[in-house]
Length: 130
Image 1 (cartoon, rainbow, N blue to C red):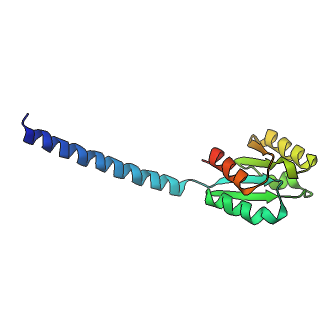
Image 2 (image 1 turned 60 degrees about the vertical axis):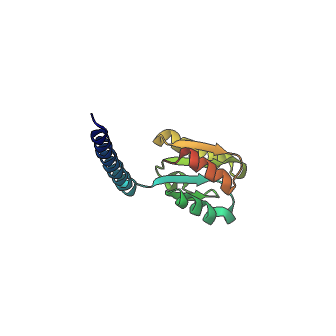
Image 3 (image 1 turned 90 degrees about the vertical axis):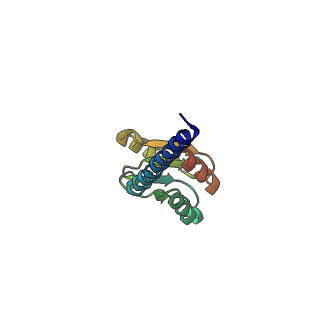
């Protein structure tokens, strides 16, 4: 092949690959738009941090329920989340047992963390959020 033919083939190839990349990017954006938000239940933590926990979850495209204190029907309120985060330093044993029992029944994942800081939640969501 001549140099002219090689450069022409290279231009056609680059144009084709660029089209594939753009269509792949469009597919990815559509997929991300349609993907449902991951649901997260946070058990434990500090009362004053509830809004920050929800804001952090929202920044990771997750819906969050936060339970800092034991309620009468916690097992029914937990629901069926994708992930349950237990802040073990600030939670009662009864709440932990309730969450673990629900996780065994409904087969969702539990992550335990000793600290209940915002950065600890960020790390957990970076590791486990889809």
